[in-house]
View 1: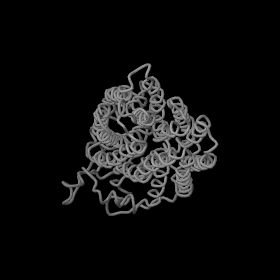
View 2: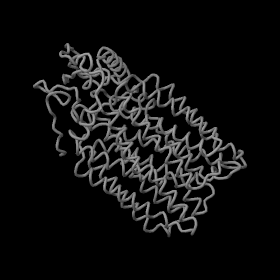
View 3: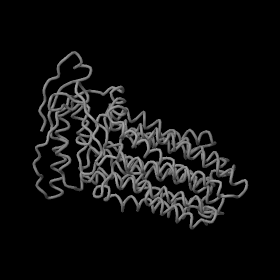
View 4: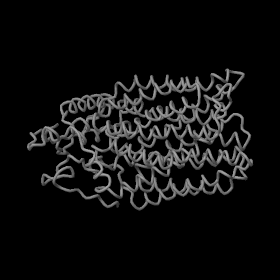
Length: 509
């Protein structure tokens, strides 16, 4: 149900296009889980499987890329540089597509960003030299970065509040399902008795593009976010989509949907200026900004530093010829951790779970750095599996946090902003640092040379956990609009954060 009123004033044509009172958010949040929600999860969430496949293929195939005859003649530093190029592309893609996602809509951008990824992955498979490979990895990253911004915002706006935490954590954790597939896929592709090594790594990238095309087909059936539509003056479309969803969910669940009387009044706008978005992030919600920055920097450094070069570490220092099995075990523990722990983010709460997973995984990583010289390939993988069983759930929750604690009009850009800043600080420097440390240690055969990277990652994770413990938001089970009122929403006195009124940031309790 939505009632509208005309906007007034000289800005109407440029900014405000009307006022409506709507119950759409409450109607979406009160829905029982049904097969329709699985369509959303499969159509949108499976992209993380692609990301995991991409990253793992690069990590597993580091040795295959080094020979001049069958590979591209790359050094360990260049393997790390390729990882940094991918992450740099993801940062730029997140910011570029994130802004467009808030301006043009979720659906347009999650179709475009996946298309960019698909084309760039095909280009990677046809790389003829390191420069081509670096450029293709950069473009692939831009597509994935755009996905992070568009997908997390769309999922949160379509999934009922009581399921949001577990769904977000599990979906982001599905990255590791792709990592398992990528690890196992590289085993036959890197076996010279099975396939010519000059073609094995190229086929791996080509298969990623095939999977992306399948996801594009499913994604066509996922609707635009009704929340985005009614704020941008398209309330009739939003109402029709919600009615279709309600009818579908009622049929699939065989339940009579409860009535809801909760409404929100918003001033509709075609777009929200970047100045207002910046003010929202840095002035209206400073503590949430600190939390998101801390969480993203910690997880970005930890994952990109450790995982991008893990295969190189195994082959360089521990004489592992076939890294796929080790990487598959490591990746499986990450996915299982996110899947098993995800319900606790809705029951025990965001603050306890995020702080706990960050701090404990950071302490375990520091301990691993101390005993690194005494570890074998098996024991190092075992320690990694234990650490990242916890860290994967916490890292996934970083995206959940950024997507739910800021106003709807800024959601995609906020995800993109923190992803880009955190990943630039930790995700670009991490692979470069670890690549340099691996090269340095290789000259002396000393694996402890990379321990400093472990200690830095541990410190960042522990710091992020402490910040979350003190400044985190208890968002479990709450509607997005109650966690962060839309900028265009009107308070009872007719004011609001996007207009003449003000909105104070709630003190975390």
